Length: 112
Length: 115
Image (cartoon, rainbow over all chains, first blue to last red; front, side, top):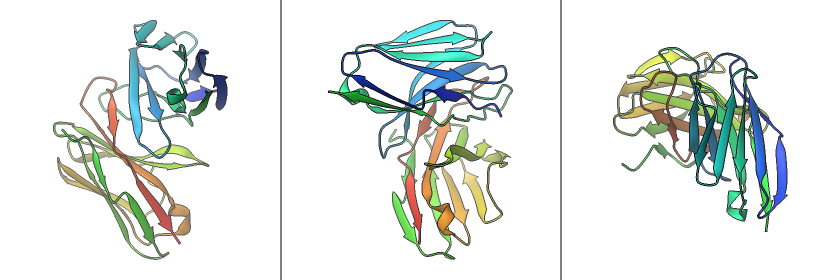
């Protein structure tokens, strides 16, 4: 299976702290994507990093990709209570057709 | 665009009944995905389409499940007959074409309860 596996399964931090979440995958990729899901809602795309990129930033988000280790990390800096959600990594299959599968996700709780 | 639209938002049905979930993807998106989410199994890809053609249905759990995409703006996921273990949140997502995958846009989901 190509799907990514997130780590840890759950993370609880204090508001203002940084949150680091990890994702590992098994085969070669063209890109890796991170999504957020608020309770009772659909997934929302956060950031996409291509296989030839090592780091990418978007606001308080920083994503790294290490293709030699087949892993990625998502860092949320200066977390807020509103960041409380589940976070998923997604690894599309390589090839012409973009089969998109997800890991089980990380539950992040940010305490006010 | 209003985003991916799913209906109904909630469905409660009795075991053995037919259930039809509906999805309207974002206009211009060539890919459409159906997912099922449960606490036990996470987010499972059931089937996906490219230009209205089913590409991979290996995630469809049983013959009781079927999906169609008669045109670029509409897809259905049907369960017949439904069983209590089908209770889950079903998501539809769509995306533009792109080598190796692009950003997927999700609907709000349909929460299905089979009693």
